[in-house]
Image (cartoon, rainbow, N blue to C red; front, side, top):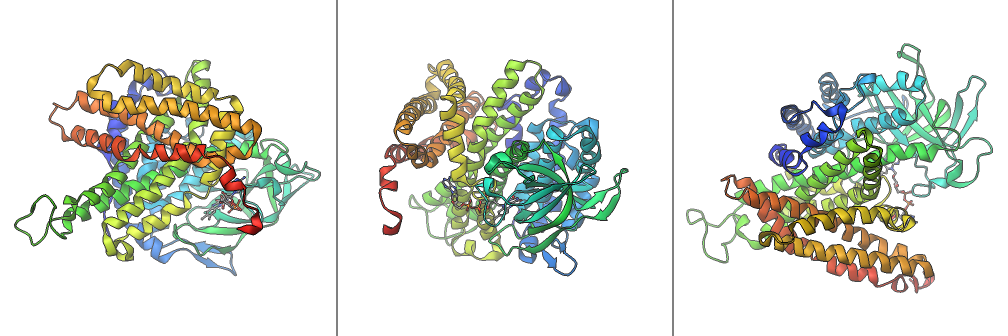
Length: 596
Ligand SMILES: Cc1cc2nc3c(=O)[nH]c(=O)nc-3n(C[C@H](O)[C@H](O)[C@H](O)COP(=O)(O)OP(=O)(O)OC[C@H]3O[C@@H](n4cnc5c(N)ncnc54)[C@H](O)[C@@H]3O)c2cc1C
């Protein structure tokens, strides 16, 4: 069923040539010893594990799905998932970028990021089990007490336990301020939590010894809305002091959802019936603590989009070289065959290059943001840490929404390359399209991401974070403005930079008069910013490719062609998006709801 080969060459290009991570790591004492050999070795091993162990379970996991035993409240994952998880744990993969103080390997997030791309390409549904554990690790690492850290972190890092995030309830997803789950304080300092959560990914399964649920609930007398939400650690089995499993905690899976995709991941309804939990992050500060998890998860969802884009592209490419139909418009290309391979046709190439450009743009973008995260967490200079934190905050909603929207387009285009065969499940392409769809919804819908970007991250700080990023783009434009070979990349980049500045100011002014203007502009606005980011990275990648064009390495020929395709065929979408964003709120808001 298809193939997946980790794109090591492009990953190495991004890390070593574009981002020059070894130089950056030298400024981060924790990573100063990390060199290209270590990085390449991890990437190679990751590539083997994902293509040999996880990819073969992707299609079968989708067909089989998870099984719920209502009487025993147990969930069994598809055949092979549990064994693959055992191998993952034994190889030490969960510990890769975790804190050595609790048993982690202490490698950079930029490296873990590439590994997550591979995991998601090979099997998104499976990857969500350890992916959520990593988010739980980050949340407890930042907000847990010393006692909580020493109890939970080593088990999450070793992979013996997995984690979940329990936010959503039937009546509230986006608007968590309405949640109703309750937490009653107990004399021993714990809480009894009661309520019902829905759509909890990896909420119950058979892969780990224990599951650490991070649950949002309200304390008695808590303020209304999002200011009255607290976060609790609610383990499936109450841990004994030595970390062994104690009593079963009454947090049970009542049902698993029938759904469009990611069938191998158990999406659970979780019922808490006086389950014991412990407060983390302070009373009524739950959303603040949960944001650590949510931000990690938003970046993780972006990686899901990239992973699916890459694997769909790889398979569509193989098919397009093999499948013969019709003759090339410019004359026969395969005279020994009754028809030409479909890769000769211009529009098949457009579809393939769309996926290739979206994958390579996303790889550069997410690699960069992961490196900024490493610097935010580890750079000795406080100013640098602050700048990196601002940039990560600005770009997180763009990673989540732009990459996953593009993945939906890319997987669909790759399915189209197969013609009718793409629609038939045997080929595996329709699974990628189905799996890609959820990435635009969970972790805050892509609309919510666009409101976060334009409202919170840009307008609420008067554009300061965007200006800082814009200054980087401007510096690149100025440094390379006289390079004629690069003009085809620099000119549209500079032009879009100016347009984003003007568009932001225009929306900001209109928003003073009418706040609906923000909601009306946000979605196209985020896509425009996404394109600005991609144009910036494609211009940098094209620069490197031009410098190496006489090296004889065809990798650079391919990179340059992809950059040209991106600038010529995908970037022009911004003209339409800017018109949409400027068209104002009236054409959306004028119609009374009952006249729809
Ligand atoms: C497979 C799956 C796995 C999931 N995993 C988890 C999990 O592990 N843990 C967890 O807690 N949750 C999980 N979720 C829940 C997911 O995060 C929510 O479904 C999502 O946040 C949207 O919430 P909702 O479904 O209630 O939609 P709603 O909030 O009801 O939104 C409906 C529509 O209204 C739009 N909308 C809402 N408010 C606004 C606004 N202010 N402006 C503009 N548009 C708006 C939304 O964008 C959306 O299009 C999962 C969901 C699914 C389907």
